[in-house]
Amino acid sequence: LFFTNSIEAYDNPVWKIFAGIFVSGGFLFSFGQFVPSWDSSYYPLMMSQNIQYKEYLSSKWYLIIIATIISTILSVFYLYFGWDAYLAIIVGAIYNIGVNSYLVLWGGAYIKTPIDLTSNRKAFGDKQAFNAKTLLLTLPKLILPLAIYGLGHYLINPTAGYIFVALTGILGFAFKNVVFRKIENIYKKEKYKTLLAYKQKA
Image (tube, rainbow, N blue to C red; front, side, top):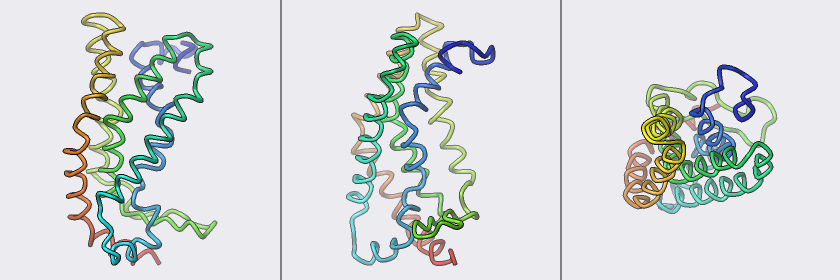
């Protein structure tokens, strides 16, 4: 849809970055935004064991990064649509690693939807999946990279657009420790609200 220009609405170079982010970040979005909901059944036990949030979040982050890299490699068949298409995926992956990986973890602190992995029925809770904070965090995940690419594409050239998006991802990766400390503090602040939400899942 995005790389073949078969739909007029998507016949815009900016949409290639949008597609690149989704192709490389499918697992990132589906898994990352529900951290720590995946662990809701034993989250109270984890907290009682005094597990450091930094270690917990780092383990989830590395899982997201590994999945993003694997997705990017597996999407090599997009070369069929040309190097430009695959370059959009690579650049999208860099942005996902350097920016979106933090944002999904950050948003996860506010999504207090318990997930029952032992049940085939109603595995997801249905009360607190979306709120204003998670919706606001969607903007830099999806809209910002499009704006950054558009800035470089229309002011300079398409290559500059890709470079701008990639540099944003690299810059975000460079500030990993600073960002992680902020995310860790948010999880600590939301800890008791999260525990309460998981206890009420029944």
